[in-house]
Image (cartoon, rainbow, N blue to C red; front, side, top):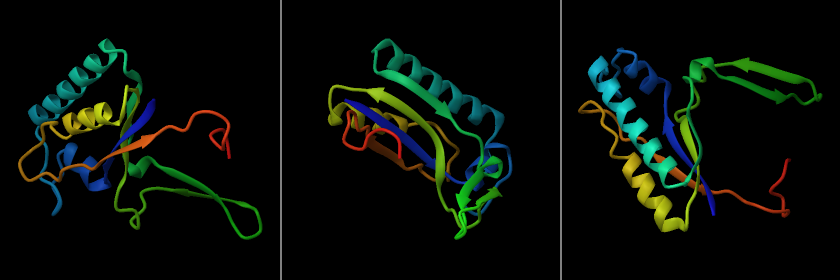
Length: 140
C-alpha cells in the first residue's frame, strides 16, 4: 500500500530553525540544524535502500505560501501567507510504499526521533493511506 506521511509545523518552527526563538520554540543553532538534516538524510537513504521511498520533500515556510480560492461570485481570490489563523501547516512529507500500516507506523515513530533543541515542540506526524483506483481517487 502507498501512504502519505506528513510532518506538521508552524511559522514559529521555521523561524526557530533560522535562529529566532519564540515562546513556542528555542532558537536552533547551526549544529542542531545540521544534526536534523543528517538525521533526515539517513532516514531517506534507508527508505530508498529498502525500496519504500517513492518521494519525500521538505516544504518552505508558511510565509512563502499562497492560497487560491473562489469568492461567492466565482472569481479567484489569491492570498499570500503567512496565515495567523493557521496554527499548523504541512512542513514536509514522504510518499511511501510499505507492506502494511504497522510498518509505516514504525517509520513515523522514527521520524519523531529527529534531533531538536531541548524545549522544541514535538512535531505531529500524520499517516494517510493513498487511495488508489477509481472510486474518487483521481482528481476533484
